[in-house]
Image 1 (tube, rainbow, N blue to C red):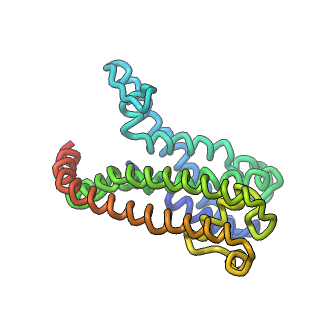
Image 2: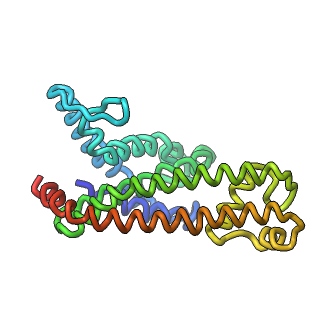
Image 3: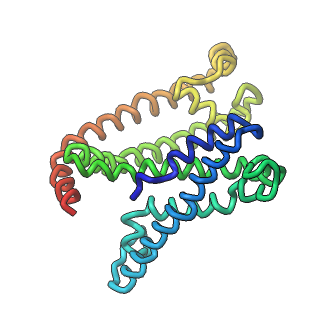
Length: 266
């Protein structure tokens, strides 16, 4: 049920934006037909299924806990599907073509009211495409190996989250310490700019002038601080993450093969 979805809509929407206000009537009709399918067929069909599942869960007292909050089990097990429905409802309310009804040319999305929401409409469109690809991953049940790999990927995401949390704490500590040096130029003016600069250094994408200032500037304390930060994050934390993922993958994959067979049978 996920395959006939707004994938073609995103492609034609991009073509419409590139063509600008002077696109042909045939292109506008194709765009509108895809949007009508998404808004009046795809969305109501899936919302009816989700409402039925939620009511069934309430009747059978099937609940799932996320933290300390209880949700109907179907909402937790198919969170991406419910999120997609919410995002599509947002797209309906922001659709530029709806705002431009009655304007010339016919079925255009380029008018003062449509241009005002054009940028806002692109954000839920982006989220919807990502959620659709996430839902399309259910196709992996046709292969036990691929299904096991996907399940391992989900299980190992906890290790990645721990790494990101630890990295954020270390980044905040070193950025606050760098801001205490009160360097007024070259991206070291505040905690926020220090954090951005340190992320750039960690990723190897720092601007040339910032590198030159760090290498040639007379600030040994800042040089030592950045060196320690790079060692802690780029050497220690990153290699610790690789070791964690390698060890967890080897011990988890065999178990996931059994879970994949159960999921495929379900």
